Picture 1 (cartoon, rainbow, N blue to C red):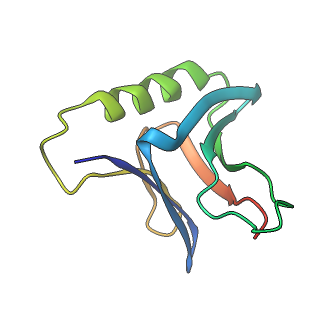
Picture 2: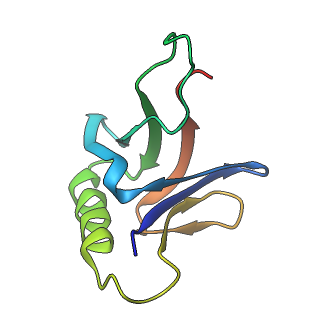
Length: 110
């Protein structure tokens, strides 16, 4: 069973991305980790972006710790649970790692 990364940044604003769609995890600025995914929904005109982006706001200088926690969760036992890895749930204050503080979701234009 494929695992999915779950992100909830507000009531009625959530996304689940298949792990296989994860393109990169990067640190673009202090206290920020970006997760880039293959776009889940495409504009048939081709005017959309080719990727969805999740921005994690984290504790300053803890980028490596958060990145490693994501990798460990992805590579954990694939035969247990419901297949969903909660990375960030701002609504219920549930985070994959103690240094994740909040998140935002930016989907490719639809």
